[in-house]
Every structure is written in C-alpha cells, then in structure tokens.
Length: 262
Image (cartoon, rainbow, N blue to C red; front, side, top):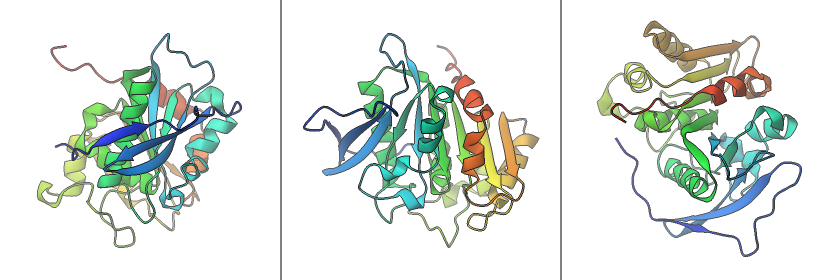
C-alpha cells in the first residue's frame, strides 16, 4: 500500500536559511502541487556531514496547524529540544499541516515530502528514521506507519487515536474500511515496528481507549511495543512523556532491521 504520488519541488529561501544559534532551527519552504508550504528542520549541536545522523519526523497536533511555518515547533518536541538538546542528538523535521486539515490524506504526503527533502539536503541514516506524533499527529503517525511500517526504525505516539472519531474527522481512516477490524489490521501491520504509546488516563479530548487496546493486543502478540499511561494525566500528556529521558534514549537506540536478502 503506497501513498499517492505528488509533484514536489524544494524551494530554498531567497536568502540563506538562518539557524538560531540557541536552538538550531532552520526555516525551509517546499512546493507541493504548486503550493508553497513552510516547515522547519532542527539540526543538533555538532551536526556534521562527516557521518550520518538519525532523523525524526514530528507530527504536531491540531492547535499548531497553519501557514506560518513555526507554530508546530512550540508544542511537544520543539520545547523538549530547546530544554534538553543533549537528549536529542538527531535531525528533526517539523512539517506543518494546513489550517483545518488533519494529517491522514494529502497532509501526510506533505509530511513525507519534507522528510525526503531533509534527507536529500542533510546527511542522515536511512536505517534510523523515526516517527513521533502527538494528538492529531499521533493519528497521523498511525496512518503513516500503517501504510509503510518498514520505513521507520521506531515510532512514538502520544495522546493519539486510530479508530475514526466523530469529533476528529479525517479525510481517510488509519485503517481502510475494506481491511477489516481496525485493531487487528493495525496490529498486524506494525507487529515488528518498535513503538511506544503514551497517554493520560484522564484525557478529556482523546480518551485512552485506542491506546489501551492496541497496546494490549501488541503485547499479546509479543510485539516490541511499550505502553505508558500517566495517572491523572490530561490531554497534554506529551509534556511528561517528552520530559522522560528514557523516551529519546529508547527511540534513538532503535535501528531498522535489514531487509531479508540484503
């Protein structure tokens, strides 16, 4: 199963992209189907092309949608990078979903386009490509992982969901209707993908039902999956999740398994 092909072109800004010396965030613009989209790339301290670096694709939540190209760095992984850059020695890609658009569908293609452009521009390790998403971005992470689980070395999903919800409609469901029961189909697709699901037990926006079910199912199948439920945790459980040094340590220690025969 593959995502639709889009015409993608990378536009460098008129002047060289500025790096904030304190954060390493770089401004970028990409053109997809004739429309320019702004996004950001974080380069860790000490980055050099002399060796390949791990790369993380980060999918933000619904509140960070827009066209400004920076709001997506203000919640979740962006603040974690600014507070503890030493914990995240990786190139991080921050695409931004357009207003009123959720990740499943064309926005997911946009996210992959920013990742591919980053991999062309900087030296990254193809066997250490990671997917991280929170809330709406967690839904988008499940969507991308379902369609191409072998692309990723590991995934972290925080406060996300995968069964369609009337309060959070998407252009496409994570699991296509024709693929059967969502829990079973999703578990089968990501069975070998190392993943960590984190959720607040009192989340009033996205209840932890999906997280609990998929975690239990994967555990029963012996999958390399972790599940953390924060007691009295609300919808912003990504804050305590990303404050855990174990999360980046675990994530960046994963490496994609070699393809049989290679």
